[in-house]
Image (cartoon, one colour):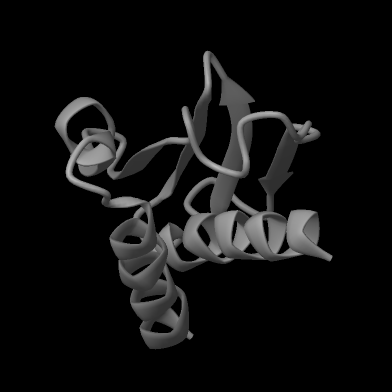
Length: 100
């Protein structure tokens, strides 16, 4: 559900803001011309930067697909026009799992 993942992401971002982190790092959610989405979340200087993430690629159909990876201290995800929730859910699940 987008509300849960989106609200969770807002709270995660807020928890990183310390009057310094937000000046160098952040979150970008953009549309791409496939059509679809591109998400980039800086994890530098967060509790996530030292944890590995195994790239995932899911292709259900030509319009229903997404992938997520961590590269250069950024969680990155791309997907079809209806897959933004999948990308945000994946980030949320990973971030929660490293705290356990």
